[in-house]
Amino acid sequence: MIVHKRTFRIPELMLQSGRKLRDVEIGYEAYGTLDAAGTNAILVTHYFSGNSHAAGRYREADPEPGYWDSIIGPGKPLDTDRFFVVSSDVLSNLNPKLDHVVTTGPASIDPDTGRPYASQFPIVQIGDFVEVQKRLCDSLGIKHLHAVAGPSMGALQAIEWAARFPDFVDRVIAVISGSLSADPFLISMVETWRAVVEIDPNFNGGEYYGQREPLDGLKESLKLITLTALHPQNMSRLFSTKGKSRWLDREVDPATTLANGFAIDRALEEMAIERASLADANSLIRLVKAVQLFDVRDRVSRMRAKFLFVPVSTDVMMFPEYAHRGAQDLKAAGLDVEVHVMESDGGHLDGLGQIWKAADAIRRFLRS
Figure: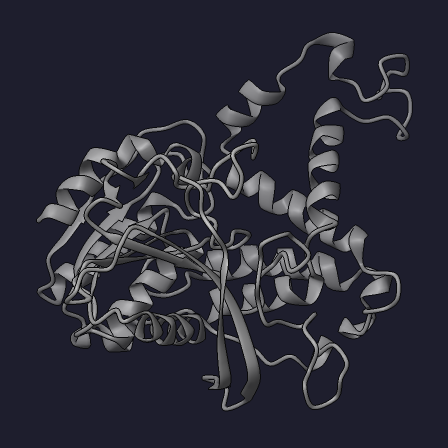
């Protein structure tokens, strides 16, 4: 599919924090056709470092399609011959410098000052992301969602949908998900992503726009994210080397000097440097806070949707235990819940690149 990025605008948005944002802009993509009743829609919500590009290509020459292209399109589980599929960017998207990302976040211009929001951009929560998505759905003529589906932080948004708009959504597909609230281990893990950004001297309390940006801190944070998103088996397969080929400098034994390290360090460093050039430190910090604040446990009684949890067996970021715990809590409340474990050795990221392994389970669930 060739797809097009569009922009949705909201004149004023009240956040859960009580702060207001004016002139909000969010990018979105749509695939398929909305039926006359406005009830054949599926909303796809994206992961922490992702964006709305869930399927298709912007140009035929693009090297890669959207992250869930294997399950979105004609004849695929999220069948665009049957469903109208919509995916949108979140507030404070991690990568505001990336082509095709449209987001209102800390790097955006505050209409009241004419300068970037920077440190003054408010805390945003998963519920705020969902509120924007609901307004987008309303603007597109969507009267009811057949399903909300998303991986990782996107799964948290999908679960929030069931709590916030229980009569608007029939099904939730939570891939590589947390449970019904942020686990203490998860809270602490993502805190390390934030901490290494803020100790970069160039962070300057979040006031770095127009100056040197905290790229070193961002780089180290993105390295941590990559490490936890990959399972050790996958790391060994991708980076396994022997003898001197393991060394960063093959001519210098790392046992003789602290100045030489290992090849895997260079690989992670190069990936992180490229990603950091597109990311925004203040945005990352606010996304971390949004994940940490996630909690729907006091609203389970409001939920009506059916749930499908799809954990990855080797996930060491969103452990399969989280999905099983969330499923147990929802079942205890009398809800219809399924769990389909994806057997894979790649860890968390397989919920993106290997989602085709769960295609049959997703197809059955959408037809249920």
